Each structure stands twice: as C-alpha cells, then as structure tokens.
Image 1: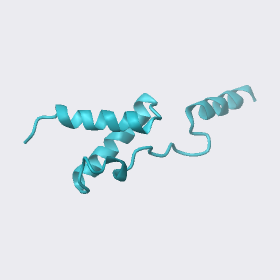
Image 2: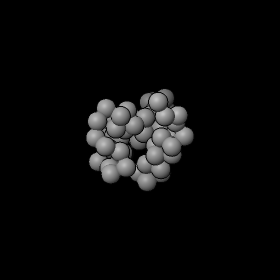
Image 3: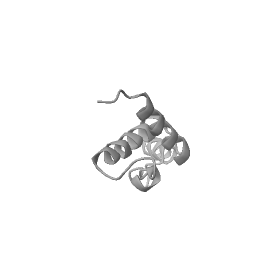
Image 4: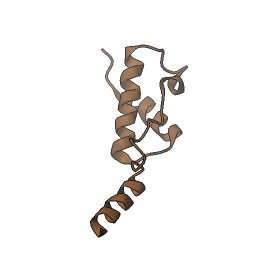
Length: 76
C-alpha cells in the first residue's frame, strides 16, 4: 500500500522507525561545567527538547547550546 510505504519511509528518515529517538546528551557530558543535581537534569531535558525540535545530532553542538543558554540566563 503506497500510503504505508510512504509512512515507513518518513519514519526512517526521521530516525524513529525503530523506536523513539534517544537523547544524545547526558548528564556526564555536562560535567565538570555543571554539578550533578536537579539543575543538571533540567538542562539534559532541555538539550533533548532542542535535539528533537531542531534535528541536531551533534553532542558537542547540543552541549555548546546548553552552556550558552546558562550564560544568557539571569541569575537569581
């Protein structure tokens, strides 16, 4: 069926045919710049959102964006 073939092709291109896309950046990738804790968890989640929304698949680029976002954020 052409519609199913097209769907499968799109899923393969999007990288989700075999399951959900795994996060590229993990907490250990943010050390030593960020100490383990709740803030690190939030940043890892934010990195995953960026990965999914932008299609970035480069760990160094995701880390750069996350660290840059911290520098821009106002301190409380």
